[in-house]
Image 1: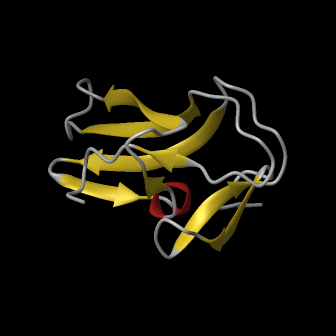
Image 2 (image 1 turned 180 degrees about the vertical axis):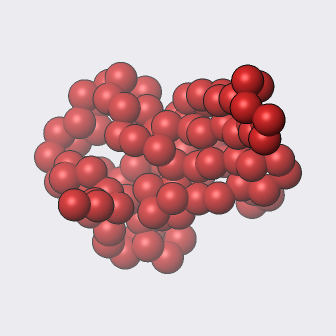
Length: 105
């Protein structure tokens, strides 16, 4: 069954902007929370995880980039995906934040 967010996260009103992602329980530093963005050519697509994480100049998460290609196929494709990784321990009830690099703030 498809789940747009990990079981450890929930959406709630944010003091930063609109809605935000919040930890339902303690999340350890170095936890891979899943895919937040996909890039095809010059298009960037946010997943539900990437669509609700708010910006901070002192974030508790970062994006890890993974590149994919299939050069053996006659229809060559290349794309990148980013996973959201915690860079600090996050307490239950704390909002997850990311330093935006794709968007102007």
